[in-house]
Length: 544
Image 1 (spheres, rainbow, N blue to C red):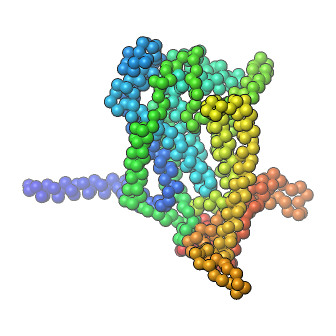
Image 2 (cartoon, helix red, strand yellow):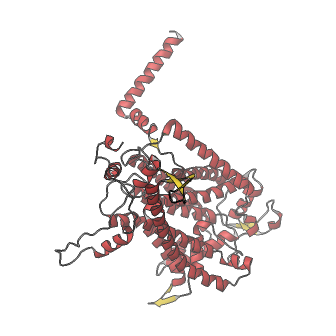
Image 3 (cartoon, rainbow, N blue to C red):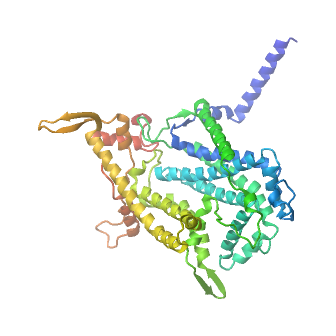
């Protein structure tokens, strides 16, 4: 049999095999549909990809580091190449980190890439959540995906804390000691939880090995599963997009996944990896040899945690001392409130916010167009106030360093930060809300008067005025197409003896009452309604 005939027969078998598989598992049609899926082309949508690719860098560098790290708390004299610590009793974990840093070729670079990638990973998830919050991308049908994203953020914090604690140096040990104090502050069960986690009295001999298992196995597995779930929901629910001509609540316009978007996304990965490598090569981070090994009777000067748990440090420092004895149990409020109650309330608010806003707006259709933050002044003001409160707590976490650098009394800084924690969010909320309403008013003037030009004209009265030109179609579209929920007033009809839902109606008025009406003709208002109509409400061609 000739070579050409054999090749033709093998190709025929391959085609039949693929056809048979496709009839049973329609991979071909599903794959073609997925590869042509449209992704909107806007820089703000790349924040989630930064988190994804940071996680990929973490996995690659973390696998490499596992070959050299020994999660053992058994102590022995250090005999490595770092001379200042030779002969010092160190744990196997700490000694292995020094071995990676000084004796393994490229070890310090990889370790610092890993640490910088961890900081970028948590930051990217946090900023991505803020983008989703301020643009309203958590609304129906994405409430579940929002909860998945918040859970990802929670596990990323846990993963970062576990990795931060593994070197068993004086700085990470101080953080572990702080976390043990927070666990002990939980009423009734705190001491039992501490013994269970640390395997006895602090620091014990089990905590590093347990954190290592959590860090390389348990939490990464959960993170990868949640990332897969998150991406699946993105595919199922479609991507959100900004309002532009042709963009409606029923379509997605953007670049197809293959080849345009995948090429840009791959480029983003290589740029991120290069920037992380450059940061690791130029900027030192976590020099464990400078801190020394952990000793329970020592504490590191200027001990500052990574930024993502710095707000807890600040809250602990600002909370006044307070204790209560109840039935033989001591409740340490100055640790329980900032260390346990504060983060619990924070994440409960994050999980529940989409449902709170839905409760205020009432039943709403699916929303696939992003809000401009100025068009939702109350939501934007609340988010800005929360960010300002976090900034105050983060700054308070370094009050000792600030006091030392600027020769200020620590007590004065503590009182100042306590005042700022209440004043700054209040001022930020009202200033942001006024700014949003001012920007809406500016949009209204632009719609009425148009854009100013570089020309100056003389009026009939002898004066001078700037010349104006009409707004572009794209800019007018972006201003007019917006979601403007009205305050709820259910249960307040005149014939009712008792008005129902007073609290919800009052909150809805506070949330949605203040807004600037945009000038629009009846035809323009109808077109906006058509554009914002949910899938299935109007024919697809009606919104084009």
